[in-house]
Amino acid sequence: MATAVKLDDLPKTMAVPQAATSKMAARKVKLWYGAKQALFDVDLDIAANSVVALIGPSGCGKSTFLRCLNRMNDTIDGCRIEGDIRLDGTDIYDPNVDVVQLRQRVGMVFQKPNPFPKSIYENVAYGPRIHGLASNKAEFDEIVETSLKGAGLWNEVADRLQQPGNSLSGGQQQRLCIARAIAVAPEVILMDEPCSALDPIATAKIEELIDELRQHFTICIVTHNMQQAARVSQKTAFFHLGKLIEFGGTDEIFTNPKQQMTQDYITGRFG
Amino acid sequence: MAMTEGSHIKKHVVRSYDEDIEQITRLITEMGAIVEQQVAFAAQALADGDDRLARTVIDRDSRVDGLEEKLDQTAIKVLATRQPMAIDLRIIAMALKISNDLERMGDYAVNIAKRTIRLQSHSPMRPIPTMSLMAEMCQEMVKDILDAYITRDPEKAMAVWRRDQEVDNAHNSVFRELLTYMLEDPRKITPCIDLIFIAKNLERIGDHATNIAEKIHYMIHGDEINRSRDD
Image (cartoon, rainbow over the protein chains, first blue to last red):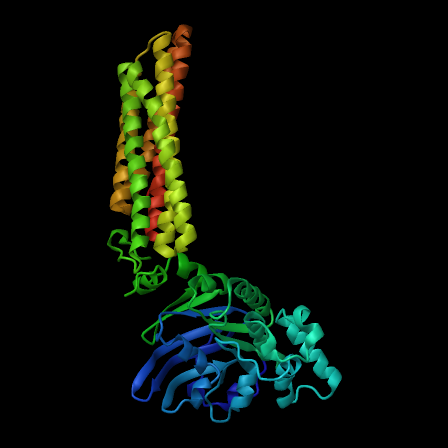
């Protein structure tokens, strides 16, 4: 796949073995918040057009790792990261990488729906506007419609695009945030517990959506809901105390995990 | 290899979840104990031509069915309320299947009992020695497979699984032997047919014991067994 920074431009020693279909690859990722180490040598591959679920108890490092994937941790004081994370073979921590561009390619949806205090239309059009993805109203209209359709929200809001985004229900707001994320045509979408504030029906809609989004995007999702991880992902990573304990096919992890710790966690035997 | 030591698994954070799983294991154990006895009684009734014991087997079958029903309900409730994963899921899913095997074994014991009664009513004929041997083998298999379930011992389960071939061989020789009796004396055709059916029932009991062996293996290891019997 074509990338902005060519692999050849990078020193050869930094080239990491990466599975041919990996969209993102992490190698020996270590992270510190001040003196406290939060991640220890995490190796993880995310295949293109797949959903990878990150699970583990609170404080295990799963959200921290997720946030490494689009450098959201850069903004945290005292946060230091080592190791190597690549998007299509390009080191995302390379000094030449434009973080704004990176976050356009690797979008994010958060735990609590956080629409901008603007209209539904403007919530979706904002990203494409700052990235210059459209030049006239017709083009913006098209992006807004496509994105809202992609997020499964169009039919519910088509007749009230000028109403404030936060006038929607929680589940609709979250889908609006997904529409906002996909409006800038990202390649990877990171989701940090996107359903934890939603009721079961709204959750089901998001899960259905994740499955559809997988056709066009690569998705990495953090969830505390084990059944959700089992339902939406193809691969699951189990984190504990900052270490990646087990990473494998979701079917395997939830029926026959290889590590005792994984088994204890997913069957509710922790602590 | 997955985690194998099923018997050493830790307690759940929610204690009532452990109680649910224990209840399921208990129901299978109870059902198995009755089925083991049913098979033993049926074999005894056959050996002694004991009508009364045969009727006891028939009367007690409802207890097996009742336990199977109770197990189904309990397992469904646990699936709905706990959404079990990994070892827990395997224990519950396999309990549902094992109870089905046990119920079928109970039915075969009843069939043997019914044939035994029939056998006494017309021309009494003692079972041939190979059949007694076969009945013993099946009883042993049933007993050992239940021990393997209770102790969660996949090795013991596999030992039962391998023994099925012996029962199949015995079944074949019983069949051939009874065939010669029928050829010698056509009046023996009716009782011999009953005995052939009884032998078939015993053979099926052995098959279900091996089915349970496979389920115990899956329950503990989470994968299928290697199906070649020479390993």
